[in-house]
Structure formats: structure tokens, C-alpha cells
Image (cartoon, rainbow, N blue to C red; front, side):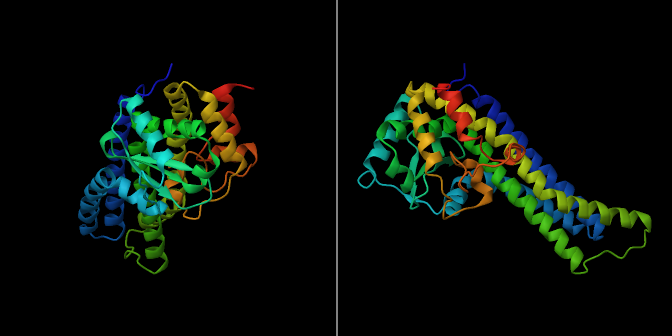
Length: 297
């Protein structure tokens, strides 16, 4: 059965593989741009940028996410229940006490981020704290601590940087192409092929980025639900919290598609949709998650 540390080793490996993919992707795009624009300096720039991108993704991931979410530090005096629940469950899980942040927002939600268990952050919205009792709050915090113990948040946060980069590169190429930044095409058909490849990559890039997010996000939510339930020994607490979040779903005021997959529930409000569209959702349906926790009670 899954536990708090079952996937830690695999997730570390996946993190390094993902960061290597970022590096290789940047180099490949730099190589393509250098040929297309006939400027070798572009490849050098992209190589340097790839190294810097991975450094930023690893060392500053928590700061980037906190900035995008609009969160602020939470004090023990102002948010006593949140602080003590995080403190107690961290001890139970054998994890260092993470930094605690809150977002002033009536939409109920929460997330965890950071590069490792010693540099972790847990954040909850004021809307979440307003609707949950202590047992339900323990279920949510256990879920987020499971992300930390499983090393999920680093994997997910690196995806933020990857998806952002893919979108930027896509936009850069399309703008340069539309604004006339074409190469002097003396290569006939080979030049036309490069143009077609570039346009196809630019169009597909956002979809590729989204699919990467989805591949990482949904399975980790189920794992964190199961691990969190094992931590509290009371799956009904998290199940009840998820049901309340589902009933009170509303979009967050501070939204960014780049970090949507980090939240415990869909930050856009999680509106019901056709079954085939759920393939492109960052989170599993709440009803499925509740059923996985407590069955059909």
C-alpha cells in the first residue's frame, strides 16, 4: 500500500529527467533557430539560458509560485488552527516544519511547493480556513504534507518553468515569423520545410506543455489523497473537506495556468464538463477522489 515515502525516490529521478528534458528542449530549439535565422549566436544564447532556467527552477521555485499566487506569510497568532495543524502533522510525518502562507481569497483551496522537505511551503486560502472544521483541515494539510514527503512539489514546480518556457518560445517564433524575421531563403524546398516545421512546433507547443502538466498532476493527486489518509488514519476527514471544496467551488482571484496543477482542487472552479474533456483537466473529478477514499458511502 502507498505511504508517505513510497514514491520519493522515483519522483527525484523523474525531477532530474524532467530538468534534463528542459535543457535538451532549449538546446534543440536554439539549434533550430540558429539554422533558421542563420545565426550561430542564437544556439550559444539558448545554451546559457537553458542552464539558467534549470537553476531558477530548482532554487527559486517556491518564490515564483508564491509570487504568482499572491500569498503572504501566516503567523501563529493570526492563524492558530492552521499553524498548529501543520506543526502537529509535520511531527507525525517526520518532516521539518514547512513555511506557512495564506492567500486572501474566498475560494477554498490549498497547495504545497518548494524544492525539498527542508525548503517547503504550505499555503491555504482564507476561504478554505473559513469552511473547514479542524478534522477536515487536518485532512487537507496531510494531503499537502504528502506532496512534500513524496517530493511531488519539486516535480510539479519544474513543470511550471517548462510550460512557461514552451509558451514563450512558441510566441517568440510566431512573432518573429509574422514580423518578417525570415531567413534569406536560398535553399528552396529545404527552407520551406524549416518554415513549416517551425510553425507546426509553435502551434503544438502550448498543447505539449498542457499534456506534460496533466501527465504529472492527476496521478499525484490520487497518491497524495491516499498518503494523507494514511497519515491522519481518518480518510473521512479529507473526503469531507473535498466535498465542501466541491460544493463551494469558485475561481481564485489570483490565477495562473502555470501553477493550476499545484492546488488541491481546480483553481478555476472545477465546473462539470463532458467526460472527454476531463482528459484535459489538471485534477481528477472530486467525486472520483472521494470515492477512492471512502467508497460509495
